[in-house]
Image (tube, rainbow, N blue to C red; front, side, top):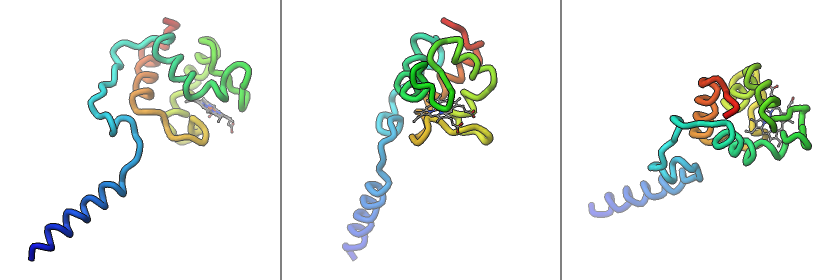
Length: 121
Ligand code: HEC
């Protein structure tokens, strides 16, 4: 009779470790997502630098898409393609290409910045 709880405990451990994967928000759930303060230069550029410029800098220009530089980026904001791509919406190329979707917080910050009028701030 005593064996059943032990087996159950082992099964639970197996299930939990089996589902383990590296998602920043889940590993560090207490990090708060700051979408109240957002600016092009402090928040948006670093996200793009880390995830997109490898293919979409002015020099790389992969797929004939340049996201480096405010005016270039603004074109994709206005067409809805930036948000469509990072939110993996239907009808858009899911970005970053060949990589997992951006962290929820990064997407939220970009979306909040766009809602604010996508200012060059
Ligand atoms: C590994 C290279 C690579 C990375 C990294 C990458 N892209 Fe792209 N992206 C491409 C290519 C190639 C295309 C053109 C795809 C096509 O037309 O088939 C493209 C197209 C796009 C488009 C146009 C989509 C459309 O529907 O017309 C947008 C917007 C875009 N990328 C945004 C981003 C953003 C934002 C990031 C970072 C979060 C990113 N990309 C990261 C390679 C990349």
